[in-house]
Length: 100
Image (cartoon, rainbow, N blue to C red; front, side):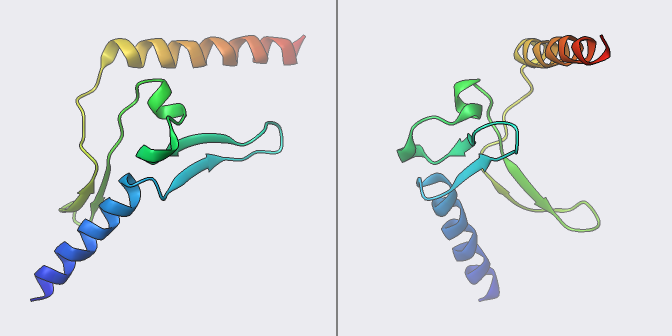
């Protein structure tokens, strides 16, 4: 019976995360708020705009997988190289500007 309750809780959590009720917003003191993740009904967030697919995997202390929220996608090495290369370029430009 406890397994049924756990399955119900997992289903409710996934529904809440993917149903549009949850938003992840990055707030800093140097920029306006940026929506990182928004549910399906709120339009695309930054991750969806960049084509980044994400999943959350919850494990115990031994590394055994307890549950996964979302669908894990394989690594897209071309997209990763473009995004990380762009971030590295921006860091180099800002770093050079700070050192001059």
